Amino acid sequence: MAVKKGYKQTEVGVIPDVWKCATVQELLDSGDIVEHLDGNHGELYPRSHEFTNNGVPYITANDLVDNRVEFSRCKHLSDARAKRFRKGVAKHGDVLFAHNATVGPTAILRTEMDYVILSTTVTYYRCRPERLHNAWLLYGLQALMFVAQYRAIMSQSTRNQVPITAQRKLTLVVPPLIEQTAIAGALSDADAWIESLEQLIAKKRQIKQGAMQELLTGKRRLPGFSGKWEWKRLGEVATFLSGGTPSRANEHYWKGTIPWISASSLRCFEVCRSDSNVTKEAVAAGSKMAPLGSTLLLVRGSALHNEILCGLVTRLVCFNQDVKALIPAASVVPRFLTTALRAREQDLLGMVTSAGNTAGVLDTKQLKAFEIPVPTSHEQMAITIVLSDMDTEIESLESKLAKAREIKQGMMQELLTGRIRLIEN
Image (cartoon, rainbow, N blue to C red):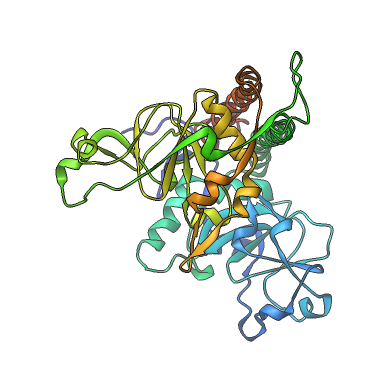
């Protein structure tokens, strides 16, 4: 296939003829990259007792989030301890690349400190600003053609890592500095758009959480409602149904059309996906089915140490033994029950006991005795409508966020390969 005018064929694909292909080592040799080092500290590797609550940040691969360092996650070292390091000493403006265990996340280090220390899982790239734009390099390390190269290296080993020696053999497609700057600016704008949506979603969720705490406890009443609420036990307002798993040995029970729900399938408000499906034969053989409007509540599993998982049943489903179905009484609005349980998450977590080494358990007897405040059905409905409207707004923003991320990925593919040029040479 002919290459169109102004472009050339290279080992990594077709690129503009004024762009170049260069390995990381070649960029080091030419001085475009000034330093390229990781946090391989050898005998100087810090021991757990040496970490402090403040001081010099010690950055690991897990601290690189959305192209930035999430300093709230970082461990720290004292100034005296940090000054002993000779490798992995990163400075403001360095591009960080996670190369071990968690491979791929990148970030530009932005800090007012003189330096930070990197763990053995992170490499830094220090650019010469008049030759290589650090924000462009950030996105270049995320380009599909670069990712494909280091994944090919990882596929040849059982270890999930790309050592610094292997990184230096990887090829980058390098445009002139003026184009690097334009590309970095466009993609940075896209990131800013994504970040603004993330912040707005976080704010809306916080507002909704506050509304839940007030509306579901009666601290705040909607217009037109008054009077005292009754505290009722769950055993009074819902019928409990235990789940079970159909026989794995019987192939006629599986690969049907009825969703089979486990802990990983539960979501707040709606049970929206399943791990697998079962057949009508499985139901006939005794597998439990949750009716529409019931609340599925996780009562056994490792997730119970961190959060309560519950979901509203919006279609007929079967569920396993780690889950209970709470079928609301006629006086209880189904979505209100689901939301009320979610709002009392911390109280429910306080009832969790350990089972074995990892799983937590909610005792059914205690659950039935657990009390929630219950207004009239009319007020329940009004509250659920308000909270549902908030959910709809959040879902709309999440849809916009997903679209923004999709657009950015498309931009990266077009801009980092030169298919779309922001500056013509």
